[in-house]
Amino acid sequence: MKKSINPVLLTTASTLGLACLAQPASAASIHVEDFNSNDGGYVAALFNPSANAGGDTSGPWVVGPNGVDSTNAWSVIGGEGGPYEHHLTSPVINVSGNGPVSLEFDHKTLLEGQWDGGVIMTSVNGAAFTQLTNFSKNGYNDTMQSSNTWGYPEGIDDMVGLDMFSGNSGGFVTSVGELGILGAGDTLQVQFRGGWDWGFVQGAGAPEWIVDNITVNQTVPEPSSTLLIGMAGLALVLRKRSRK
Ligand SMILES: [Ca+2]
Ligand SMILES: [Ca+2]
Image (cartoon, rainbow, N blue to C red; front, side, top):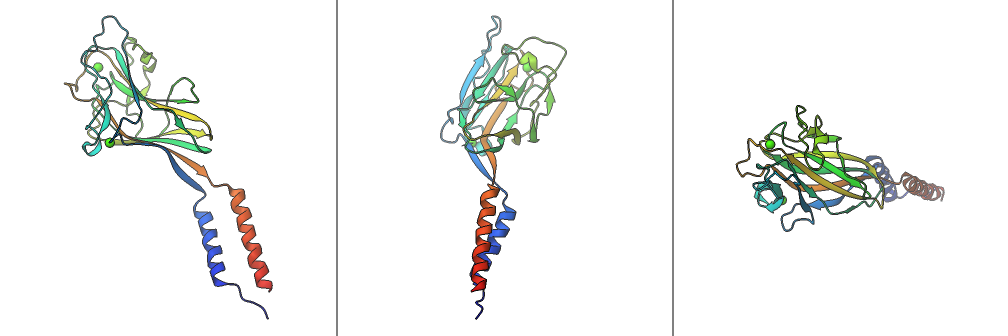
């Protein structure tokens, strides 16, 4: 007598098949910081070596209740006395898989357009920091002026003509930058690099760049060979049962 196929097995097989088709990749957060209970291990640094640059009303990056929904976040006051830069650098982030990595963060700017600005820098495996330029959501909205090269101390003069975040964002904006494909065992650091000249429009003591909810995500493709082997195995079981 020919035995019918167990309907539970059939349901399982079809469910697995649909799941395989619907989920070719999985996303994982490899770094999540809301700064609500601590500073996330981020490090603030001021670069202001110019002898006649005061910087006395500026910075540093500090943690305070300036973030989304009045939660804690990192923020920096630009102020007078530049040129100078304030850098906020993440701890070393360990990459756990192989796949494209994205950086998502909420931020708010009250910066002097064209003259003061913020850029995102990244470093992979301890290499020199380079500017992140590929954004999939709310990328740079302004361009550094190009009429003078006054020489920001850490080389932000190299930014002349380059894209940056600046102006008044009017509230928090979520930006997403794409870092490309990284592999398991790679390390990553992210840096929020603000540069100011000597004058400002919006300031008056208010934070000029606020950063909150920093997340680094990685999309890891499913190991298709494992899935195929699993599906083939299941098909074999069903075939054997149907022959009994
Ligand atoms: Ca927060
Ligand atoms: Ca300025």
